Amino acid sequence: MSQPTITEQLESPAEARETGRRKIEWARQHMPIMNSIAEEFGDERPLDGEVVAMAMHVEAKTAVLTEVLAEAGAEVAITGCNPLSTHDDVSAALDANDSITCYAKRGVDDDAYYAAIEATIEHDPTITVDDGGDLVMAIHDDYPELIDSILGGCEETTTGVHRLRAMDDDGALKYPMFAVNDTPMKRLFDNVHGTGEASLSSIAMTTNLSFAGKNVVVAGYGYCGKGVAMKAKGQNAHVIVTEVEPRRALEAHMEGYEVAPMAEAAEEGDIFITTTGNRDVIVEEHFERMGDGVVLANAGHFNVEIDLDALDDLAVGRREVRDGVEEFELSDGRRINVLADGRLVNLAAPVALGHPVEVMDQSFGIQAVCVRELVDNEGSYGPGVHEVPDELDREVAEIKLDAEGIEFDALSDEQVEYMGSWQHGT
Ligand code: RBV
Image (tube, rainbow, N blue to C red):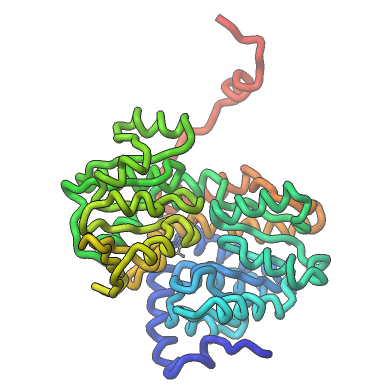
């Protein structure tokens, strides 16, 4: 069975290509890190002869990463990492690039989603770039014969790194994977500011409702939850944080948020945003306590945080009240609104654009230098999850500071000596 590319699936691919190309050009104009890396890659062609398979959110910024890898000499096969985050026009523009084959299409069912992942694997990748881990998992489950010729891969997101570490602990991860998510350049910016801004803007655009004066419940106070809470506070909401980890609960408290169990927060909240990466965060007992008209959105990678099956069982009626908003009516007349089918609202709502260009420039800068690192050091990273070498993260930070025209200090020799010694006291 051969999986059709996006071009083969669209009625007017030429038109789509044109709008997609405009979106990519806009993003690229605002991605100084990717442009700097592209210049180096274009000269040195570090990926000549490599085949990169990617499963990521196929939209304009991701397209820039994809094209930069192609400009470095790679053949690239790409598909989506979520059925609702693909922009078909961008997908078509990418597919028109001679070095790139793109299978991503918005709104596909599970079978078509996984068939597209398999189609990228059929290109016999030597490198994989994943967001969430579905690609790496499919290779281990269904194409183990390819593992020997794979140099390694990179994982973009918290949930994917979590899955990989569990796999590694079981001895099941058979090639090296860089935890791109865990770098300072990624998670202090993309996870905090990117998730915060994009989740709130997607919710605002999808509902046309204000945050001001609302009780916003943020489930989880990891990097993503921190960002969502901070931005919601900045929009004049009263923020209630729910946590299961005592230090994080305390941190949220010390940062000025109300902290409460979900069972209590359920009664207070107007808007709920889940960011935990875990399942069953908002379940039946919480739906039972919520007020009329609440809005539920998820910003975690998978759609497991809000128990939609339980909500469906409770509901006497269900209808789409706005594009991207489904209203569940309960027997006592209360209405609970769920955004984007409980999928990550920052990317999967119909109006969502993903995280802002600037933060994705950073994340994808790390992706690009990690791919280069795998090729430059072929064979020196063993199977398993690897931290990204800190000098790569610093390299990307310095490119960004340079592009922003920001100068910063350097340690003197005496300071370096001082920091490296233990003899200095009072
Ligand atoms: N993310 N990608 C985008 N391409 O617009 N926006 C967010 C985009 C990534 C982000 O890095 C996060 O870790 C991951 O999506 C969650 O799937």
